[in-house]
Length: 505
Ligand code: NAD
Image (cartoon, rainbow, N blue to C red; front, top):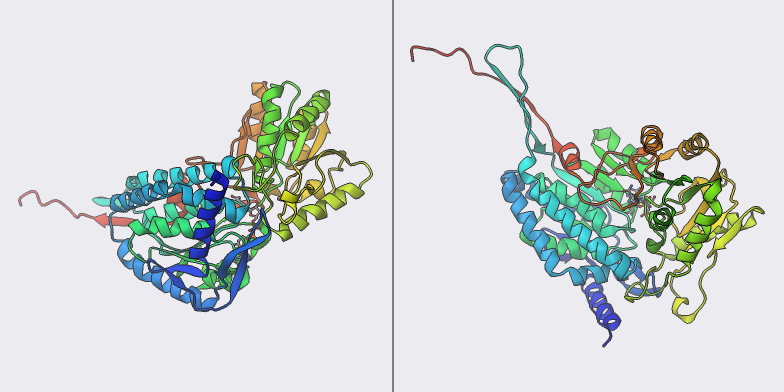
């Protein structure tokens, strides 16, 4: 048996086992609903199972389980909770091959370049939050009240609703459940309907080291399952990653009960290359920044590639050269650099934007621009990594988040000109500058309207890098200590008057 066959067999076995299951009170169980959603392997278009189409009835069961567990979990000392989460992270390590192969099957994200690193990053993030358990503490404040002690506490909030998208379903799940649980909350996670199995497997393994009900997982559509979860009266905190359109609905649904909400939303991100940049590194930065090996399906994807005129041709040629060397294929093939787009709908979205670009007379396709031909791509959702030039900056292709493997090269003359254009967007998620001029770099950091800013590097968000968007790209931060303290705890202010000391007693 080849490695591909072994990995595929393992992933399919897990998908079958998890089919039609949700996780309630520590057990994989059937949902109350008999409605189901088909789950498709993006690399082949084949059905790999079904996931319950949960509705309000299943939400009620999950929240009840979480609420019951919360009453005990919140009383366990934080460092004890941290130890249990560390044990959960170790369990994930032991079964990482199962997790990474199922991730590749579920999402179409290539095993070697994406699914293995995402699994490793998720385990590291879990360990990191577990290790921070002893840091959940309040502060002392001096007052001018005689004999009064004034301090704040950091307490768990209650049942947390976590809703995740399909593009990085493991890392985004861990970014929510690990800090929430370490901080003493219990969780109901709603998985993404397109890629539910890998998050369910991760949760199943991880929660074996926790009291039953601390982590519950349900699946289903946004309106039918997500909304009753957000509006459930016992849900006290909502953390969401997904599109701006849905983020706005979520904020509105949570508002009547003043439920705190963390929103990690989309972007349309600039990657700016000045003529004094180290071009070899910057060209690799264009490729990495656009997340081509994740089919461009990353919130940080730098799809507006601004290149200073003097070096424009060189950077475009260097990028095309690198793109032409990528191998696209089945996500579970170890030789694949690039896998498949998640679904037929998302592929249609890319085709729609490419149609607009192709109908624009000034557009030149420098690389890609088509669905690949060949029997290995026949039923999967593949699209070539694409670089275009000449697309007008006001085109929807340059203004809207495509979330596909499609980027535009945009020439510019001056720093002031490019900064004006880069900030001329309602989004403010991620931004990158390549330059050897320190003064320019610092000016960029000051002026750019983005929450995740990099100079001369372009890495994906990771453990202990506080990450979140400005403007329409979100509210709040994740992945670092501040996210656990600010978003998964609440604070009480305490004033205690010790009275006068009786010196005779
Ligand atoms: P989406 O907003 O369509 O869906 C995300 C999740 O929300 C899914 O689980 C979905 O079922 C649920 N949902 C949909 N409607 C809902 C509703 N009315 N109420 C409650 N839940 C609802 O996004 P997607 O297509 O799954 O993911 C792609 C988007 O996610 C992109 O915009 C991308 O930029 C964004 N994203 C952001 C980050 C970040 O950290 N900022 C990371 C990854 C992805």
